[in-house]
Length: 130
Image (tube, rainbow, N blue to C red; front, top):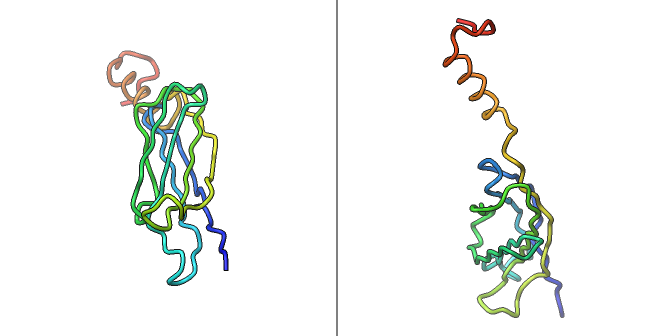
């Protein structure tokens, strides 16, 4: 009796740290009790221009990964598969998603700091509010 092993499902992803990092969250695939117990996950991230590549094996308790040191405004391919044992033969198919880092010039925190900095440093500005 052959059972097809399911890959994890990508829950969400976000570009963080002003576009220099990406965090990916996933859900474990459904498994049958006492059969196909997940041992861990294999995750990879590579830039689509092939200049950068990351690979990691993470425990089954891990459901997110943050990749740092990325280039802003760059396309990346994230791949994940479930490992159902410590061997390379009991793995799910890869689940792939394309991601992109942002420029980092947007965001509430950045805009608030810019606005606050401008008004604190320039109290003579007509728009300054005490």
